[in-house]
Length: 305
Image (cartoon, rainbow, N blue to C red; front, side, top):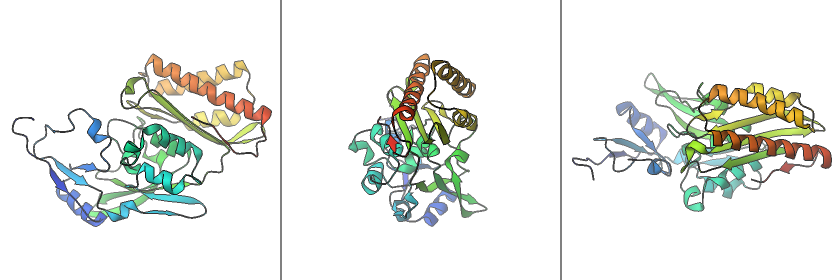
């Protein structure tokens, strides 16, 4: 134990109103959801900070709610990843399910929360990229003029220029809304360990509708845990302009364009991350080529991990 260590002050609000009151008094408090990420960080406990303030969100009933209708599912920020699988596995987009299954065993998914996977600090999980390609939205609660306000925002709008999730000062995500995607091309792949080897890991999420030989509303997101999410509407537009199947020269041109965007955003990705990204891009294109040549575009296709 560190000499002179004081135990942290734990605040346990029972509602978002109580949470706002606590944050107004202790604006530098750390938020605690499932704790699966925080407890893996070096020096997370015992803490070197004296009199640290922690706000535990597990007792806020509003953050545990789940509801669905014919168009979307809505999860409170404290719903666990295991809870998502149990309540919506049959109807939620395949790319989301595949992402959850790569995060870890049930020991992790039973504790990790949807809000926590989005709002990690100085580290990006694979989850925001997947929610981005699904056009997911989040309800953001924030304090302005000593009052709690809320605003629904697309995940793309929560990304700052560095590819990190950025909330308003003293902000919190309270709910996440995910539409039941009708896109017949969904793909998720993670290579490497985000927790053990973040400098060499990468995850790619892709979703689109293949109509004959063209893609409608394609979205692709590249996540590098130590850097952030690389997403560009320009890359989506390039995919929209293509006609499948692609030949080798078209694949090479597409890959060069993609890396132009990635390396302009994250010039310091490792050589192994670059190689792994290239491999995943080729897998996506190969799958789209195969769908175009052999499968009816009306048949939903969910690519396995």
